[in-house]
Length: 275
Image (cartoon, rainbow, N blue to C red; front, side, top):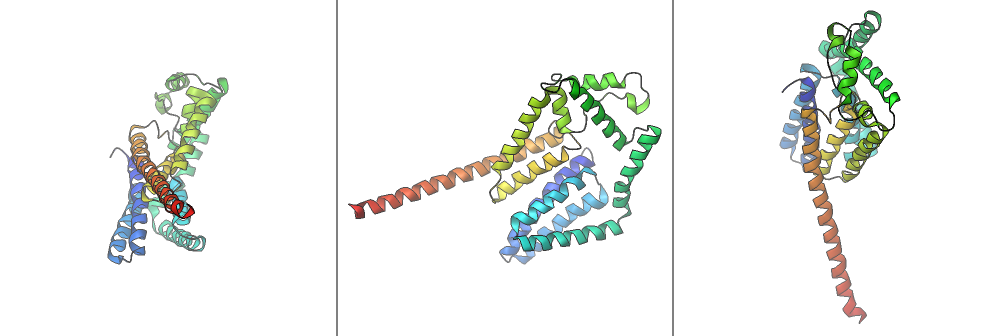
């Protein structure tokens, strides 16, 4: 595994897939299997929160948990589940100096960036976004062209020292990355892709759940990273949406074929009576 961001992306998917499998086993009264799957899901969550935390994961785990609760429980039970998760998170927050330190350090990084111009993780992101927005204003409709992101940041880094002079090509935001190169037109295509992928996974099958969490995770995490263009997360999206989407589409096609066969059989059985 290259870094905590990649690991958290995978572990979060495993967490919510195992959570659904545990719920299915529980409803079938296979309590031993449900408990085992639940423990595995808890282990993945514990690793994310207590061992190797990428702070972006905190942003997408919360909406994924809300979607899980309201997708697989009735509204009343979903609220109880979310309340239980909230209490659990408060306990974990209180008992984990590591988690608190990682989150609270964001404010320290921001202050060091504003007051001392230090290239902290938070400060660099803010600077990348500022430069990107400025560049988008120069060519808002169609962008500057493919590959111009690196040229833009190299131009801004010229004459600077230390980490500020580093050559990068990633503004750490998917929308900005697309808009710099292809403008508003590129953003419309990006959002349309996400929208139609979400529509594909509206049903409640297991494959649709996998596809849904892959898309939601990508959309939310892309607020702070350019994951569609990153090798690891990009392939996770391609494989996750491709396989789950194929299974979901095949299921829908099979259901339509079955419904058509049933209607034809009913019509055939009625026609002799009418005659």
